[in-house]
Length: 140
Ligand code: SF4
Image 1 (cartoon, rainbow, N blue to C red):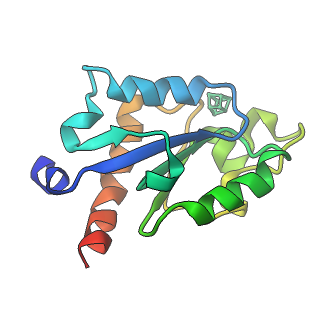
Image 2: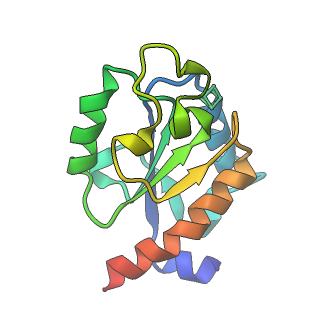
């Protein structure tokens, strides 16, 4: 598995579209020595224009609706979008507020990680599940 990922390193970009930051803290934990996401050649690089994997946390607030569509279009192909946490999936605890619900109704997503917040191990599992598809598309 590590061999496959180390052939081509991937860049991960985290975008919070209005959440509480609980999910973001768990993503940062993935980079700590205990989980060490970088061992798979996956690096945190917060520039959407250079990203391969986009992790979206939080519900989509009204202000983010158009902005996230624009950002999505600027991210080069091939790209993978992961919806992280209950808020990104359905609006979660912010559903009744000034939000448009989850990200899946706004841009296409490739993987879902449920939870409030999801565990780092679940986040890494989701990334490793979809990343081979991305690497295969890149090599085509
Ligand atoms: S899913 Fe939970 S932890 Fe994540 S942004 Fe929403 S409220 Fe916060």
